[in-house]
Amino acid sequence: MQFLISEFEDGKELFKIYEKAEKLHSNFYHAFLGKDELEGLWADVLRLVKRLDNAFREKLKRLQVSEEINHFSNAQ
Image (cartoon, rainbow, N blue to C red):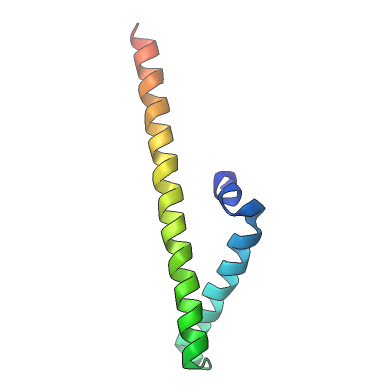
């Protein structure tokens, strides 16, 4: 999880956008947001999802490379 926080300016940005995601989720049940605010939150949360996707993909690539190096080192 620490690698995720480092991807988002020490976690500050991550938590701000997470709060927006919670507000968007609440709106699903209570329909209290206006169209403009809803669209703004949706855009922010979509950016969060894309950044998380990229962060996880990069982390997986690094882990796979590290695993391949360890496997190669152990084989010799």
